[in-house]
Length: 423
Image (cartoon, rainbow, N blue to C red; front, side, top):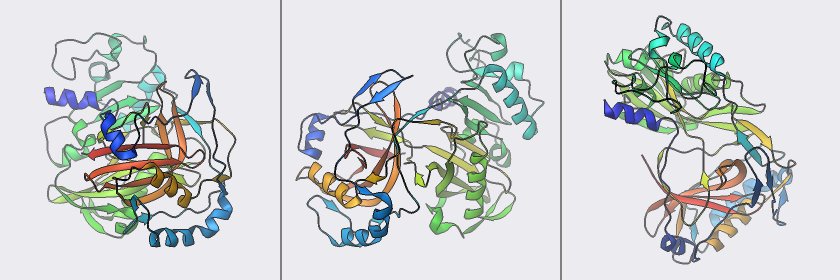
């Protein structure tokens, strides 16, 4: 039972470890205590940034006309510290501007949350569940008890309506599970995976991936989309299941997503589900044609920095033809507040490579597996969450086999990076 409780607490927010090692920092960059972040003043309600834009930028529309030729040139070139052999460089199309935005959530009210959960239970045929008993609060506003999980968490209706919002409300039974986070559902299971496997545990394990059995295939949806597997209620292609995921999250969970935000499910794992199969998708946002950076949970190490990168982390499970069965991750309804005018000029990929090549120390060789233009959420020391347009470089440090990610801000030339171990 303790293990279940621990998994639930960890699901309140996706957690990764942050390290600081000045010697490794020196090994990577050849510098001591490199700190790369924007100067900020003010507070979380009003943020003022002093952006130092690079003078070496090119018009985005003009750049797209020569981008494919530049990719060929990059793959044929040799750099001091970077290898692009077998690297996938993502296309850029239909992009006119980029911007810098503050990200923030608007939480649901107490009554609004309770009414939503009631409607959600009706939709999955679980409206006979006793909410006065099962609906619990995980925010720590009120003291719990020594009862068994989940009843050790305080009952919402014992303290109704004295909550700031519905954030942290949850119920976890064998039949279904839901947990409310910032701006809507953070994690849920309609219980279909637990029911199909005839398990007697909590349905939360569906959303946390515990009930995902052996993975028999994985890769990019763009490459595997035509593959068809026999799910719980019959055969369905990966592409069709990805479309279910896209439609589900674009409809809102439950709040509407901001204008110009669409949803993409770029990667999939096919896992065994008894004698059938299920799909587990990684999910990300796309804003005006530029995808958000996304990642898996795991251990991260930052070196001498005072920021964290909060890429999109969401997994969604599909085992039937008509719905998302379970998911865990951020809310797509997170709002974007512009911090500056839209920009039409960016640092080119080739110039970003030169910035990174100069940044790396002579004893580091980075073999890059993937490059692309993304929006990368960045949390600074004041806990402001800001999204920057960046060139993302994903690869391996050949000197120690560490997985690494580097982001070059396409407006300022600033560099953000970490090493990581995925779960």
